[in-house]
Length: 393
Image (cartoon, rainbow, N blue to C red; front, side, top):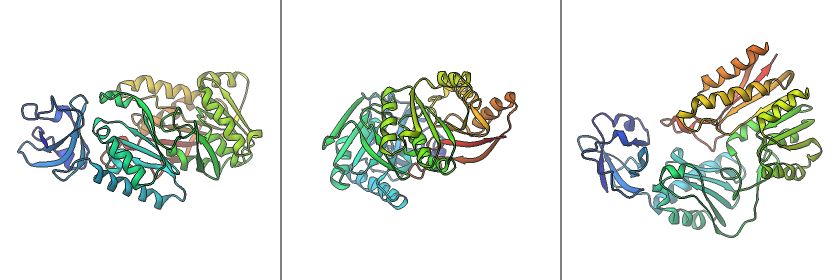
């Protein structure tokens, strides 16, 4: 394995468990990074030459190396994939009663560059790094042969692939599937779109937060913004909400909301509307509409650090408009999937938009990502999800 040498002192972060090496941490004079094929197995060494870890490298990425093992000489190959994917799936099976969950969550499961969601006997996979892409065939074989999936969907169209010099593609291996597959959650059955929908087709990360809200909405009027396929709104309807309004800008998502409402027997209480969320908020405010609960679960407005200023303003505007639609004593669920929106900044946004309106916000509960999205303690980016349940006087 090609050795990569770190500069003096740069090994300290690795020794505390961090799984990445940045290109500016390498000793350029001794580290033969340039010219290596993307995804090449390497051995990380400190400035004295002492082995630190096995990894795979990419000379074209800011993250120059991702650790595979703390032991030297370990390569990302079929045996290691089978061991770690099997362990990740076993962990989820102990936590969940049915086979619907995020099965692999990248570095948190010691599988950098791999996301895999389980939908019964269908696995939907995202490969985001060159190192994992090199073992794609072995990965698919493990999923189909060792774990018994009848179909593996490779949703390799995430923007992160371009940062690694990888092309975007979508591929189905195994038995063909239709445009949608089913997901079971909270006593409901939903259609998800793994081939054309967002990410892998469903967002398992908010499952526990949806359950928390659904248990408190009986008889309430609910507005679900950025609803996607209606996971929040329809679970509220199943929880006894008197009326649910779902709003999303995607025609395909709205069609799935309507179909999911029918499938779950709540179509009489769920109304789906295609619209930009901010435009819809302004229109509802002008019409004098009020809701007991407003769910604000937008896409990541801050994908990179350089987007922070623009992203903060987007969160401020959306939250500020949302609370204006609350009935007296109403509840806002303010969610964020932006790792770059810190907890304190999120709370500051809620406070800042509430004060000018003379409203008194009280955060009653705080939710994070569900148990199938475990947090790597040395990699804060893996703890990306947050939901504040805010009551207004």
